[in-house]
Amino acid sequence: MYSQFFILFAMIVVGYYGYRKGWLTREVNKGMGGLVMQATIPAMLVTTIANIQITHDILLGFFLMMAAQAAAMMIFGFLMRLYGKARKLDGRLLDMLDITTGSLNNGFIGLPVATIFFGDVGVMYMSAGVLGLNLYLWSYGVYVLGGKQGGSGAQMGKTFLKGAVNPNCIAIFLGLALTLSNTVHLVPQALLDFLTRLGDLSTPLSLIYIGALAGSSGIKQLFHEKDALELSIVKMLGMPFLAWAVMLIVPAGDMAKSIFLVTAALPSAVVVPMMVEKYGYGEKNVLGYRTLDHADFRFGTACLRMADTLSVLRKKQQKV
Image 1 (cartoon, rainbow, N blue to C red):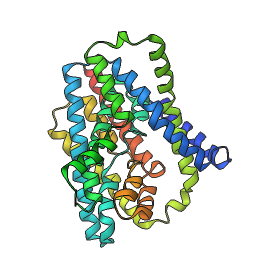
Image 2 (image 1 turned 90 degrees about the horizontal axis):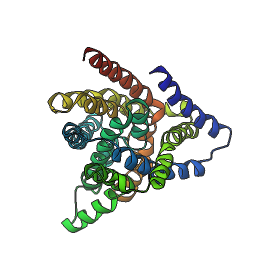
Image 3 (image 1 turned 90 degrees about the vertical axis):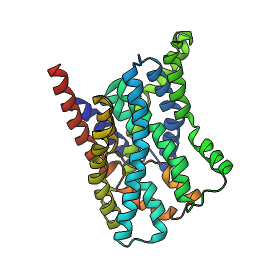
Image 4 (image 1 turned 135 degrees about the horizontal axis):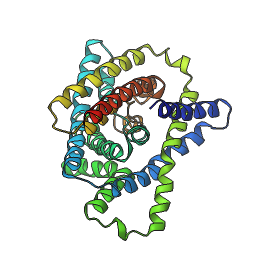
């Protein structure tokens, strides 16, 4: 387990050092992030899911995970909105605060983490969270950021499809279709090998990207954002507690519950600033609220959660 933590943080340090030395620029890092989200992660998802023998329990846990993720994000975002009101934050920023703090980065960060610590089944459950995130952001998220005006049903449906139908979601459903229909053997082996090798790049590139992002932000500068620091601490403590409460009532397996608890410690989704800029108010502020919520501050919480859940799973396996 400790060697896995070393690998994770060593890759982040490579990105941080590379940015500080000038090997990685903002433009290069942005392009690398796009490559990960649009190419390497979809390749990892389709090959990983397609090669899993999905049982009834795994499939049930998958859909429960998706629904629980979406519900937890809505609930916690609403609670953070109430907290913002109580702290007398600018009322115009509450919609942005709701979606920013409610969302979880179970795609860009969660999937590589699941690969390192939980294996293929962990990736399967984390991908369910990706679907839950897209369901949350492109329906409820757009509704809230747009001032809860919504628009016509046709307009909202078009917005949802435009945002939610992306390479990651397509790859998840394609992988499910291949494994459930038992047709993965019909795919040319050369194509599967290519997608597997492409998907293997997801973890190192994602972690190097995170390190470079930390290098571009400047860790000391992060703590000058007092509001961001306060809100991040509240989320860091509150979101895992809410996830734990949700898992008490969701009849999912131990692995699904463990993945869900880990995702609760992850940073906010990277797509939120773009959504705020397009649909809401506060695009200049959202980066400030997300800064400390990103990997620099929240990764420690995620790792502690992973260590705890892994130890619990191993104790249960030893008993069996």
